[in-house]
Image (spheres, rainbow, N blue to C red):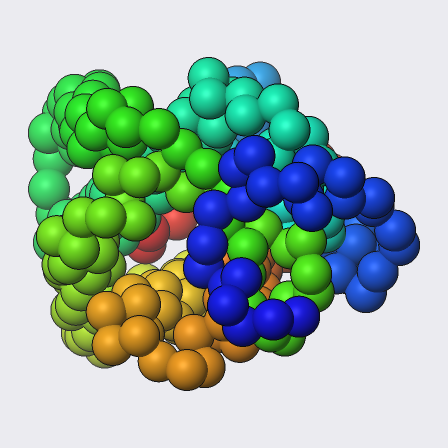
Length: 325
């Protein structure tokens, strides 16, 4: 593939208007990504089902409903981000969309995809901070009334901010851009003129990722310190202490899994600013970090947290400290 075509619009170009899709390694990779996404989404739906149908039993375990609510909001926004990533990056990479994009120039569709991606990206970042901050706040004995008020008000603010921050992408046209190697000829991504020609947007994204990453790292340290301090008090029964240790392991593991993809997103934003020659290779690995943030977190949280093993099988649940999560 000629490097002269890389990072250029394909809109209206005859060679792309006559492009014919053929099976390729990117197509099979994207199909595999769709395949391994099915089970984690099913698990997410299982957690949501328990949230809506087993609230009283969940509350008996000591898990505050605001925490589970914020976890579901975080993962739902992350699932939307994965869907947007398929639409904006992964499916166009397969070349299946190339001929249609070049010949039809579907501006309404392209603008919506870009808007959807950025709105989901900003919202998912902030919902992640909300989830982590709520867990730490409860560890520091914030009242249930306060945390319930937060979970009622803050999600609306987050969604509003995400949509408003993504809205400028509607102000200019969107286009499909040919990607360089290791992508193949016809592999494109969808991008807006606003993002492509406005470097301040790249810096804005970098600042968002940096703030979120540093905040989550700080909350992670704060949470581990607080849990260990409470655990050393010696006021819990042996059974409760064992359960709290399992919950601490779940929380710590969840925070670590959330943190690494955030760092990867931060490095990707830095690579975009620095115009690294390896940027296309970084973009190729980007979906796996995003999927780790979404799917591994969901599976890990469900499989390791004690409440999801107890609720389906028992109606008699032990009562633990309400500050455990």
